[in-house]
Length: 476
Image 1: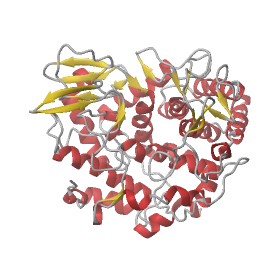
Image 2 (image 1 turned 120 degrees about the horizontal axis):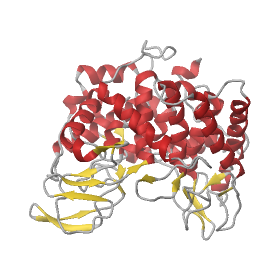
Image 3 (image 1 turned 30 degrees about the vertical axis):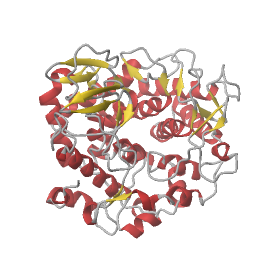
């Protein structure tokens, strides 16, 4: 499945080698990198998604647009970080970003909490995955989410360090950010006696059985729990997280990596935490770091699409990228002499990897969210998507969520997009949790912007150190 030769090219090898422990590359002074001119337009449009769709009365950001939507608390975490990018790039004033951030933090600090099923926004310092855009209360019977609250808190912690001035609003941002994080009771998600953190809780049924262990997007959940100022979890939590690693390894030699099929699992924690050159015990034993692991996963995702064993239309070494995204819908239809199952929203990735699923649907965020890991293959992918699919795929807020060149079936109810008989299906919406990685990873690639701010968050350093990470920027 993997094209080993691609891992050995001079560009990819240099990127990976520069990040391995013992190398001379300095992380203290960021290297300013340029991107093609089209990326300026893409980043500005993607920023505008958060800046223009937010409810300015409470700071809530919709899960998606233009379809009428509830708010995603994870999208709010991306937004709080995006406002800082806007200030840095001159797209909004610091005062405007500051005021919107303060509105958001005031809402989350004052939003009602409690164990009841209705009339609240969260419980034990955590928040429900989706909230009503206007009232800010729990949306239907959605779960209290440990990972989505984590993504929110990462944005909150970014704000706590970015707004470092003496203005009263910036002082209040710092106070509220620290209070919101300190209130989160991580041990509540272990209150039934388990060691790992549960993925969520319902007031109707209690803790979700599934835990944040293995290798996936939950890495930052455990790091924030380990670094918590009040409700800190035991240090051996990280051992529980890494215990399933042996069954996640894929590839050999230069392609060997901890696998998780959808690329968002290799991106989300990395958006805020700089994993370059720091290692925990499993990474020391493997001789790489998590940044290099994500680089290899990005190449594996591209290699799978280029090999295209399922014979989908449009896949190539330039058009690739599988992750969680919208899809054309739940249909079983004939395709090239056999029956194929298509899906609506689903987590997609190489079928040979953990949680793999492939129905021919590609997502721009899959590749573009990996920009810092492998710019030498991500930038050509962005260029190719814009050139070959831009007329349908690129709009007001940059790239729409996803597209499926194989889904050319007419007369079906595809509620999440539209079908062209020659170009296939294209999503209607932009999704906040998929917009965020495009914008923030571009900022990290350009100047390490988010990483530089987050390296100053004491809880991030403490959480990493309690998990056993050493080396790199943790030495300073």
